[in-house]
Image 1 (cartoon, rainbow, N blue to C red):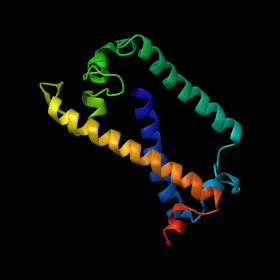
Image 2: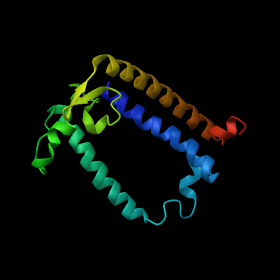
Image 3: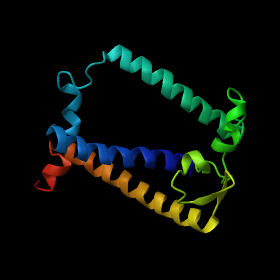
Image 4: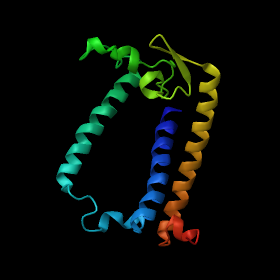
Length: 160
């Protein structure tokens, strides 16, 4: 289930990025990397190094937390900021962190006296909506791949 969530979240971001990127630049998503200066002002090496460093750190923390739940929500660098309370997994489920930082609008719970209190009914509805949207986005990406194989873009296939 956690792998489906992670891939679905990336697919939702990708689908939005494909539409916005093409609407903004007019370049097909599968040709964007071939454009000169597409990742300007960064060199490929600096971009790759930054991605490896930052994404590697985040993914290693997720990997450790997968095998030892709640091990990554401890006070370590800033004990005065109540980091563990603000970033802890308040839902108790992998893939759904909750808390004040991950739910700033209070869609899945309320904050009382500075403490985040999750609402089980709201969270269940949001989880169901998220997994449905994630599955739809993964299907959309599959369709985009088939369209790209034919040289079409999503907006082009819609006649826009």
